[in-house]
Length: 238
Image (tube, rainbow, N blue to C red; front, top):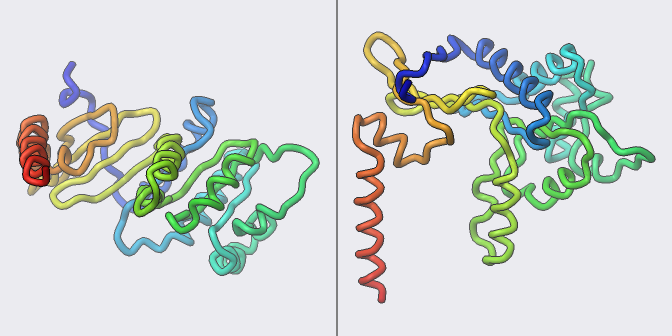
């Protein structure tokens, strides 16, 4: 069976269906023991993340997880406590968690919501000091290695690479990309009659590969062309 012939996994019909799929993937990932750091991402433009995060936290607790929800700043944590009063005892910001003192290692599931490159130093320290599994919701760490020295950049790349994707759903121009643990990455093309599974991939495809597949082109050929252009430009610089 080829990758494109693999059984089709349907895209969620709406946000609530996507949240349920994300919950099941996150639970399967955390309980697998395959890794300690997991990420779940809903890459929708204009998504109001706070209600999504609160629903996810409640669902994880209902599924039997001992949970601690952490937000990058005090303002975001305060809003979460206001809207999720039933969760206020388990909602902290990064600084509060950093100051928390415990005699025993904290093995609760740490749900970290929306850390950005600006939060990198604090977030990495929290992750390294936390004894339990970590689920990062809609983290934006990809740019954390931009604009810094080479040694620090490699160190940050290593931290970013330590995360495994439990769930990913991203609408694209003319398609969609999804990963639902333990399944592979799946690329869908939007046809006149709906979304059709186009390819199953073992790893998240880069933007060039994604664009080539959606356009019906050979991604390896596109990469060879781009590599040739890069070599030409390097020759001009030398």
